[in-house]
Image (tube, rainbow, N blue to C red):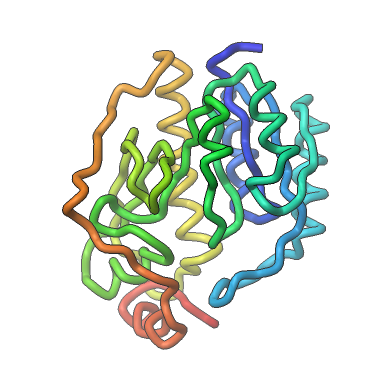
Length: 232
């Protein structure tokens, strides 16, 4: 297997399925998919399809495309996942885990670079549901690709994109958020596989930015009125 292939840590979610399908469509090299078991929804997060259905669909796509996969408990820090990461030939792992989970040092110490696509412009918008806050602040929405470190959204930036605010009625959580992330993910992984590394690497300034927390349903509704949809 090519060392510039990637592995994917995939939660049983619509976002992970879109990641996998988009990587395959772009003819990018995927060594293996590590599928996390269904996880209880975190407070403030929305649900769409059941985790069991999503896990099954992820496996079906892997089988159809000839991609190896393995199943693991929902905790991204599980010993079985760490073992598989250490054995992987690929040096880059895409993280699409469950919201609210924190990757611990044991995962970071596997020697793999963990790529995360954050739905927000960094360093300004760290934390959760930052698209809503960007809309409320009347600013462009963003997505940022980072190599994870031990802090929240502070890793080295290896790619970024800005997007126009959405039109009213757009589903933010299950359409816009995923669209933004996928668009940047494909660009970044293509850059990595074509060049053997990332062209751009930017260390984030420690004294800039703000950490946002899961937006309250009222704030989401206000954001919807300005553009986008928040129907919790």
